[in-house]
Image: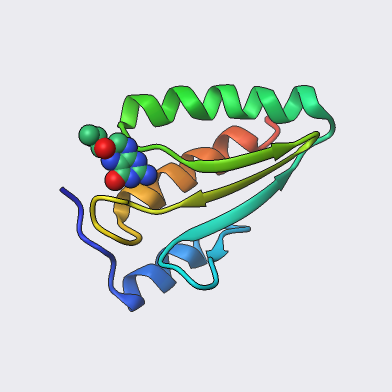
Length: 99
Ligand SMILES: C[C@H](O)[C@H](O)[C@H]1CNC2=NC(N)=NC(=O)C2=N1
C-alpha cells in the first residue's frame, strides 16, 4: 500500500503537474478541468474512468456541463500518495489535446 507523501515530495510532484493544487481543509489535491463542451468533458471522464479502474484508484469528481472538478486522495492512507500523483498525471495527459 502507498504511504502519504512528505511535504517536500508532494511540493515537488505538484510542481510537475500543471493545474493541480492542494485542496483547502483536507489532505488531497485537486484540479478543475474546463473543456469545450459537455461532450469533451464526458469523453475525458470516460477515458479517465478506465485508467482509474485499471489502477484500482478512483477520483472524487463532479461534472457540471463542460467543467469537471477532480479531487484525489488515497482514502486507505488518509492523504496524498504516489497513486494520486500517478492518476493526476494520467488525467493531464488525457485532457491534453494531441493535435
Ligand atoms: C479495496 C480497494 O482496493 C480500495 O478500496 C481502493 C479502491 N480505490 C481507491 N481510490 C482512492 N482514491 N483511494 C483509495 O484508498 C482507494 N482504495
